[in-house]
Image 1 (cartoon, rainbow, N blue to C red):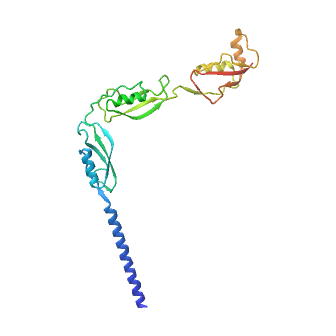
Image 2 (image 1 turned 30 degrees about the horizontal axis):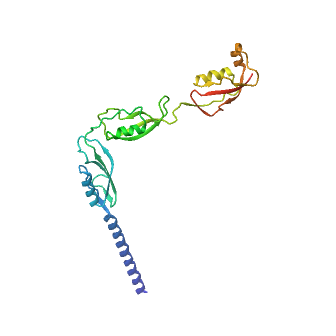
Amino acid sequence: MRKLFQYLMLGLVLLLVFLASALLSMRFAIHGRQVRVPRLSGLTFPEAERMANSEGLALTVENRFYSAEVPVGRIISQYPAANSSVRRGWKVAVAESLGPQRAAVPNLVGQSRHAAGINLGRRGLEIGSVATVHLPGAAPQTVVAQSPRPDASDVASPRIGLVLAAVDNEQRYVMPSFIGKTLAEVRAAVEQAGLTTGKKPAVTAPAAAKSGKDTADARAIVVKQYPQPGQRVAAGATVYFEVKR
């Protein structure tokens, strides 16, 4: 019985030693795969890449900015920051200096996106973010605004943001229901919305004489309409009504 107890205690001790050794090995392995990010600011990209690779890290240029202080081609900033602890194989993103701003920002308003891209490319600039708006009167897919403004001298990035007129740039309305209203009321509402009524609306009885048109319109009740309620129509569209007199 005593020997059995001794064997159990010995087994327990060996198990504890094994667990402690495994835990220590795991901790060492985890910390062994971690490295400190070197300071890359001020280096050229090849220099920064060699330094990052020597630590088992990858390097990528995420942005480029104008800078009067940092010479062209050198690193302005990095992420993760210098001395951060990361795993081997981690990707370090950097921003590269373009030097002082030399290219003047052109006026792109009224140009197509394609033409604006060519215009910017000739100056060493590029299209940044692009937004779309509905702007009645503007040609579809043309630049209606830009950021930074033309000839700006305090530009930080070579990327120029554009606002384009939408492809379907006509002002549109949702057709309301005119059923049950008089033709006089309908004509006034339609004209106020920038629409027009058909020259010859269908009727269920002979049309009134021209001399009594206003009176006839006040008595005529709309029973059908085209386009139907809920449909979208462009500004200036013609609306037709079938009335009952």
